[in-house]
Length: 262
Image 1 (tube, rainbow, N blue to C red):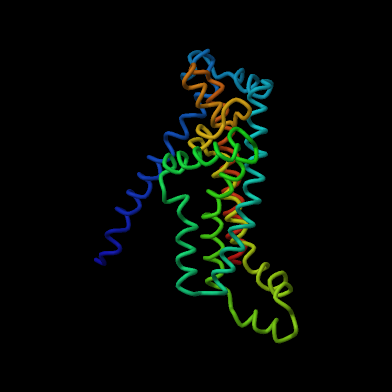
Image 2 (image 1 turned 30 degrees about the vertical axis):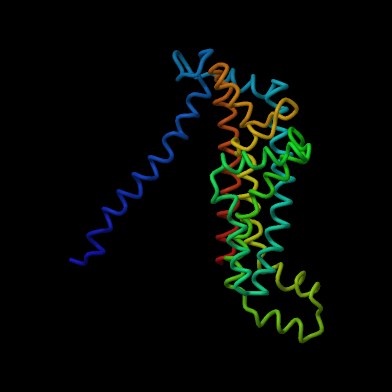
């Protein structure tokens, strides 16, 4: 019997085991969110939506959700703009220096978050950017750039340079070639990078603990404070909201990938 045929069932079992191991901690949040108790636990008598009502009627939880969305949107715009220009510039130049630039762009996801947060904290004190929208958007935008650089670079690897040459030979300038030839071809990579950059900002908790104080309470920070103060079941509801939005964004990325393959 072929070895690949023998390894098939074993590989499937291992793959499903890893998948279940990753999904089990996430799936347990959903029954916790419908508990009928006043503390974080599974439902005792019957599932209840009382904590969902609390979440969607609480000013502090809604304010935190709105702040997280605003920061995620603006930081995604910053990450997409900077990351796309960086990826296209490195692709056009294609030198040893550009390889170094690509590596440097990946540092925010290579360096441990706690180390990066300490450095940003000291710098933001001097620039008076602590606990401000601008300071948090800049940090989340910079840490979101690697996701855009990776996806756009992968898309450019399949780009036919003869299309650019044809456009230039027909009289198109650099701006026109970028807008009408290159950008439409790399748009799937830009969209994927934007989705991952948004999810990164939406879920980020470590950096926000260092650079935000009282004026800004994003959803992850609100949950962190709730864990330290009490085990409020509304935290499970907030976690469900974060998970569902992230899954929705990932589903959109999957749909874009399938559409591109057709």
